[in-house]
Length: 163
Image 1 (cartoon, rainbow, N blue to C red):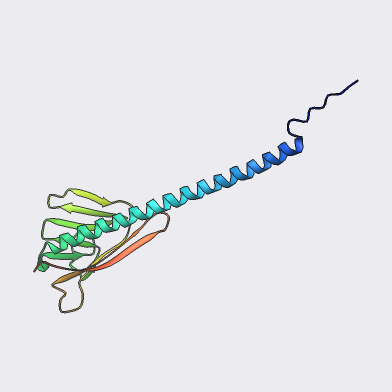
Image 2 (image 1 turned 45 degrees about the vertical axis):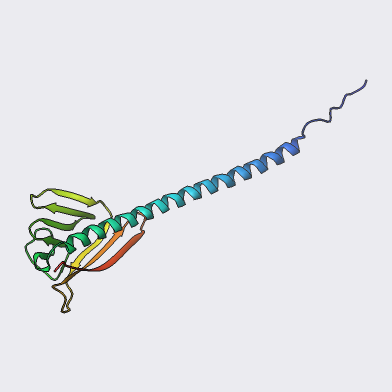
């Protein structure tokens, strides 16, 4: 009896080695994709934080520059009961009020309408007048933002009034 031997095809060892190699390649590609996704999200979070800080500083700087120094008052909070040298609330004329409420930057207009300009990211908001001769000509501003992931940005500005 003659046995036919078919030498075409793969042995069990060859198939096993090919499967192990393909599993290693697949896992490596998966790790790279997961890492790239995390980096992308972290980058987007950082960009959003930078945009929020730029928005807040531009808004507050423009509001301060548009007023006379004698009409800007700094308060400890939004109740506006006590004028202080340093505080978390800025009232400009009787038209607008900027303050920190929780972790939000809030704007209140003269009719009492409230707008939350930045939500859940304001770590520090402080307005203060310097102890120098130009303290009636300018207002110092410190704003720090912090995301849930712990990344933070801050800036200190000296903004001069229009007069």
